[in-house]
Length: 532
Ligand code: COA
Image (cartoon, rainbow, N blue to C red):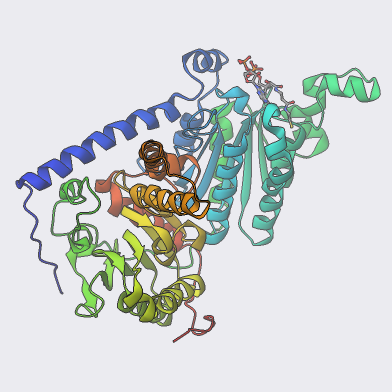
């Protein structure tokens, strides 16, 4: 074994200051997560309970095997938008009858569980995760359908929800709908397209058009039960496969359906792994408040991988990117971690080679981000930094082993791409509260804008307003800073969640377990042309 040494001193003033700053950010994060948990607020929660109904997360909790974790995804969806944090939908991965499932649950306390543009993005992301990892999907349905005032944003793209359900089914991935309430109009196709359907007596309402619409369209007088009740669908239309007498019964039946799926993971579970040698608590004090100050990612690796055992690849070459092999909860991983912010030609070439090696060996890759991007300047341009960065981006794009990304600190510019940013389809991407991501740093961006404005004024022969420039720079800096923060990015679904650094190993372990439900094979060839 090659146990990583640690130079970390938890008593050092720097470490303590970093820790304090991280704890403050975690407190802010907790406050935002609490908003998602509160759903539509006291009034609507009380009304929902008074109707004898369970809340979305209570339904999930009853569905899951006792004492098993639920990896909630995108809890901050819609943060910073006009919609409620969480986007009226809960999504995540949990274990039902020993089977890892992708679970979604509408939150009927938020605008009747109606889907807004962020709910849609969140639901589509959940579908992608289910498809990539072959996870059975359980939808706990109770929704007012499209959020009507925002229909223009969701009606047309929203068709993908039903498309995805049938594509999952076609791929042999089971889909199960448990209908607790409203599932009307387009929403009727959730049970309509699912492999298995359970409906709750006198609660489920599944029809294309409710009584008022039917009266308008055909003049026919009808009622909810005869148009779309559970009993009607179980006895008459055949849309319901299982008739549940109440909510707990529906959840019990859903568990029985999962138990009978005969869904098998592609790989057996690895043997129990040894814990890291160092305390995960230390992870709170590693990333400096000022991301310009470097930190050694080996200190992070030492606290997340099994037995802190890490075999570094090319440690003396391209030293601002650390690469090497480890295992995490027993799963082999290749790790790429930025050590000193900037990526040079050597780092890029090293990364491309390392990614190819992982593909030859079928080893998943973990990207730990702290990069300000690829190096600029005459020397580096002449040295071929574009070619070499392109090589790394080519390798990341065409790699076929599963990728996981965690934004620890900076994730700027094309460095975000080369390190498998969101657009490069990592199976999962999480951010620490200390992360920041944007096209470049706020000061640099404001500075560039100012230089461009100054040059433009000079070209027109106009005087430049220096006072106005300072105000503009300050304003732009502030805007870019706020748009770079993890809560903002998480709100826009640019990650799968912001996590407590101490949970990193657990979260990645859950992800790796989900990943190993589907078979994968690295790319043996099939990369684009590497410009040498
Ligand atoms: N779009 C936007 N807002 C909606 C909505 C929708 N589809 N469905 C409900 N809401 C809002 C309501 O206006 C209400 O807002 P308010 O409290 O500020 O007045 C809030 O969500 C709760 O709705 P309410 O009707 O009081 O809840 P409920 O639990 O008694 O009934 C529904 C829920 C979904 C059955 C009912 O609201 C409904 O029928 N909505 C319309 C469904 C529809 O036709 N959707 C279009 C399908 S494509």
